[in-house]
Length: 60
Image 1 (cartoon, rainbow, N blue to C red):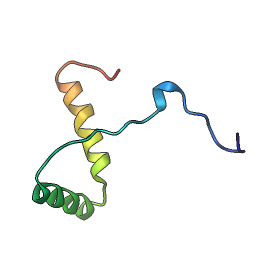
Image 2: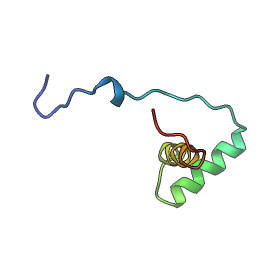
Image 3: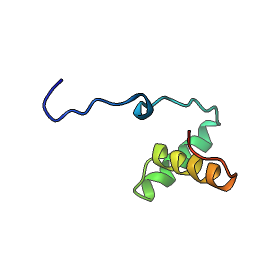
Image 4: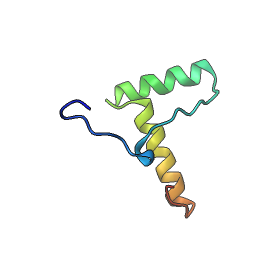
């Protein structure tokens, strides 16, 4: 392994989540994220964490 690279554990590996939404909704969301200097991925991850916390569930 190269210098400075950290091997990810099984818990650290990321996966993709495919979501079907209308193109206009997606475009408006991306634009709003850019206006707020954030990314869509970051905001979706934040939503999922908040949703789990509010529902009494914890991250796996």
